[in-house]
Structures are given as structure tokens and as C-alpha cells.
Length: 198
Image (cartoon, rainbow, N blue to C red; front, side, top):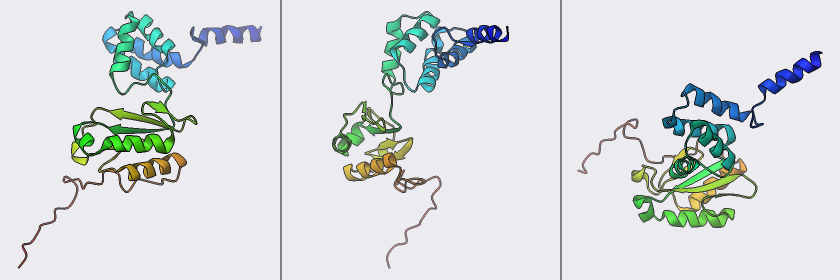
């Protein structure tokens, strides 16, 4: 009898989709009262649960929020934050905005593609690195800019970027990167007055 009771409890606990990560999505959907305008929050929760947005997850969200699947897919592909492919252990995003483009960010992308045998928008075969590009990261004063695992790296060159990414991927990087945000912050840096020459 106790074994039958356990099996019945397990059946009640199992999610209809067969994956317990769907319960996390369900919680967000229920908290948002199945409102369609909560789509971005639901997709964010789904990506946190799965690491990316597989097609069956998009279909599930569309069905639960009673939205056309094309609408859900459109939102998931419009926002740069969402990924339809599994991401690597490390993430490298190269800005291709105007200031970064003038600063030769395309050379950085080419060097990373060559150095890691990967094309932008993909993940290495070993799953260690995902290389992405963005239209603008909003750090134009630091152009060209690269974001490596949430650390903003400014005034990058192809050589420094490949070196930093290689150190990060191989685990040789320890502590904060000394080149991260290499420009002094005027809000926190002490002011140095220049004195005129005699």
C-alpha cells in the first residue's frame, strides 16, 4: 500500500510536459494571472530554467498565454537577451554599434572567430564559449566594447580580446580583469588638477 501511495504522489507532482523545469514557468504564469502582456517575464523565467528557449518551450508558453506561436517566436527573436540555441559556459558579446564599428569591432569579431573556430551567433563545439554581436551596448565612450561574462571591456583590440577570452575560457583568469572598464570613472576617481607649466 505505501508504495502505491508514493506512486500516486509522484504522479501528482510530475509536470504534464515531463520536465520539472516547466513548474518554474507555470509559477510565473500563475503569478501574472495568465496575462498575455507578461510574455517577456515568462520567457525570461523560461530561459533561466532551461538556459535557452527551445521550440517546445515557446509552444508551451504560447499555449498557456493563449497567444499565437508566431507572436511568441517574434518576441523571442526580437530581443537580444533571448537565445533559441543552447549557450556556452562563457559568453562574449562584441558591440557593432557605430562608435565600435569605427573602432574596428569587426576586426575583433574576425579575430575571435578565427581564434576559437566559431562564427558569431554560435557556440563552440565543446560548449565553452558563445560568441554574439549586438547592435549597440550603450558604452560608446569605451568603444570598441566587448562584454565577457557580464564584464564590460572597453578600448579593446583584437589581440587583447582574444587573450582575455582565452584566459576566461581556460580558467586562467582570476579575480576582476584589470582591463575591464579601463576608463576611469569620473564619479569615483579622484580629480587631478593640472598645473600650468612655469
